[in-house]
Image (cartoon, rainbow, N blue to C red; front, side, top):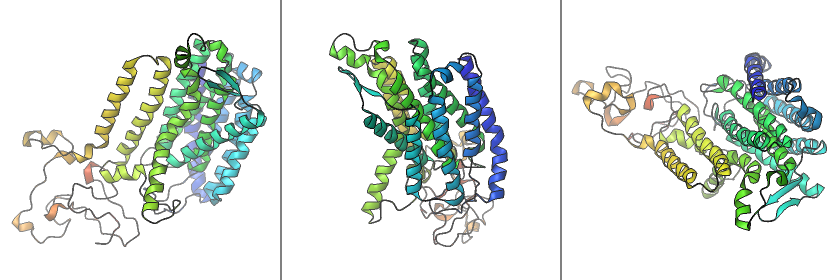
Length: 457
């Protein structure tokens, strides 16, 4: 564990220290795309954050190769070299996309080639476990197709969820932490050395995300771009492929006893295939809703809009940071809930705890809908969003928004006085802090005036 933590810290430090120079490099090279209609930021922000993350990956692998307890991973397995080869290829394509915005089909082809490079070097799924049956060996082409599919799906899931500052890096960090606990238990608890590469990959992935997050949290000074999102997606998939294709189920002794007992005992074996899907759960739900929404409105399913889950959280009334934290909560609940259930699958307490936390998550999700009446004596001790608004006096009648006595004071019809001019239709305008206690993109639904910032008056 000490060597894994050292590798994690070195990876995080290198990523953190390089992100600042990479930001200056991105600005100098003009890697700052124009703001799109679906973006939530208001100023052009440099990308290419994946450069720092890639060098953090290289530093982590280099340090692990020189540690006594981890260099055996490089001597007994070719998987670290396979990971580095595939990561270098996908990272290079991502850098080019961040700068020149290459076609989606080219990126898809590069993802498949990167997965094929890893397969050629031995990082592939050799078998899949089936409860009550045991090991089902895969042919070469079956293992290759399954490996490529898992890599492509995971990469695009991470890329799809990268919509708010710190969202993708945080969700991948949570998934990697849960995956690390699982693989470390397999490696240390059962003494299976084949799980060591996946444990190393998870530790390095945590370091990459932790080192990048301080620069990417709201307001983000730099974005990871496709060079970062595709990279961390590939590393996450590589860990799942490694432990799935190399762990010997006979060493785990899970297929013993009755068929029902074997099914419950074999559950930990399926976790490597399930954990990458924990990060896909939220993006997949968002994808399905987007397709239904766009088709229902007579638009193409591929037409970009501002109706994704993180946009809806902002519309409900959550601030940018709170929206990210809510999605962190659901990701952690799914990932760690799966890991806990794999350890004690027969315990009902785990299921009850997951249900209770899900209820808490729903309350937090709908919190802006509730506006409790706070007594006058308690108003100085609560956030501004829960305080009563002063009524408009006769001397203030006829004043325009923003001309009341104090900035941000309530005006007629319950409108929030921001003092900011409305921008022409289709253009972005900056809404200052004050709406719901944080910077938001639009007036929230509990106000009578529901016109969005940037719309016509």
